[in-house]
Length: 238
Image (cartoon, rainbow, N blue to C red; front, side, top):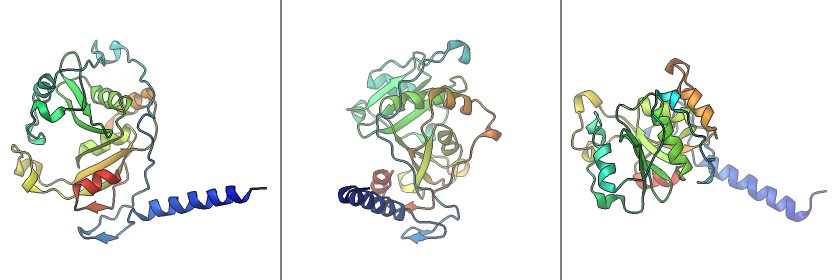
C-alpha cells in the first residue's frame, strides 16, 4: 500500500500539473492583449536544458559534400556571416560586445550558424544559401549546446521549428516601434512574434528525415492562444 508520504507526493505533483495547465488560456480566452485566436494550445513539455543527446554526424553525401561542422568563431566573424543574409529586415544591429557569454557557432563555409544564450535561448539562426536541411543541423547543434527555447516571426519559421520538436508557448503582437531598421512594411506586414520551447524529443535522424520531407507532409503545430504584452514574461514562460 502507498505510504502517507507517497500519497502526499502524488497530490503535490497533481496540484502542480493543474496549476501549470491553468496558466495557458484555452479557446477564445482573453487577457489585456484582446481576443485570442480560436486554436487551443497544449501545455508544452519542459525538458532540462541538457536533454538533447550528442548529435550523430551527418554524412557529407547527404548535403552534396557540405558537412555540419561548427567551429566557434570570433564575435566579429559571427556577425559578418549573419549579416550576409538576403533578409536583412529580420536582423537587429549587433556589435561584438553584444555576444558576451553567448555560445556562437558558424559552419566552416560561413553559411549557417546560430547562438545560444546562457539561459538556453537559441538566437540568430541563419542559413545563407546553405544546402537544404542545413538549418536543421544548426538547430540540432544549438540543442546539443543546451538550447531549448527560441522565438521567431509567424509564417514559415514556426512550422519549420515544429519539425525539430519545438512547440508554441505564446505570442506577442508585432510592434513597429521595435521593428528592425530595414523592415519592409509592405512585404512583411505585421507578423506575430512566436515564442517556442523544446517539447517532443526527436533524435537527429528523425529531425533530418522529417525536415527532408516535402513541406506538404510536415506536421502543422498547434497555434498558441496566449498573447503577451510583456516580452520578458513571454520569454520567462517559454
